[in-house]
Image (cartoon, rainbow, N blue to C red; front, side, top):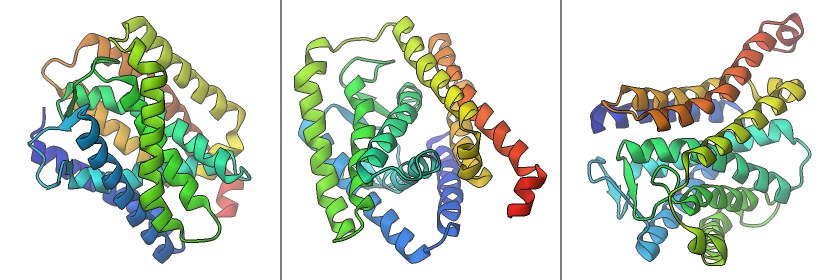
Length: 282
């Protein structure tokens, strides 16, 4: 496994590449302010969650911390949120803000279903409760709750969107986490069986494949640069997992199920980018 400085350096490169894609899309000043608002809201949300609940903690090997949260994690959050927002916009271009935000939260939850078990297995952070490969489901849902909340704030056409995101998104995340935990997950919390984990991975993966095949025009709207940015992040985690001394066959099998949508989406993107019709639109 790579050393923590090497992992952080790779993360920086991925983040920089994703930010270039984001800022090239236009309205750079507004986009930069939105990215900063998401980063600030993410730090508030994570730091207060860690302090309030004590469910998880980051490994001490991270280079720089803002209280309980690594600085690099704060910078990564806007990339996660805006990448998912871009994909949702491609598939649901006319969706109202609430639906767009909910779809963004769902996509981020799917991403977290892949990232969280791998990162936890590599001890980038750790959880105090059992669950999906030692990650409680409420932790995975927390990604989606925050992404949906902050996306809804930023989607508002009027008013102080960014201050609203800074304060309301973490507050909504707390409310949703507490409601989900005490309303259900607290009473059924435990290790998730491998069969159920694989079934969840297969469900979301097959759903992504079907959606990509049926909505090829939406896939073309995503853009090759956006897909390559997401692919770089996915390959990073796959590389860490399979480069580990003992990746674990169960986790490896689980993680590989998520590769199907990435492979198909990239293939469709490359095919469409090479078509004459696509070249004429560039």
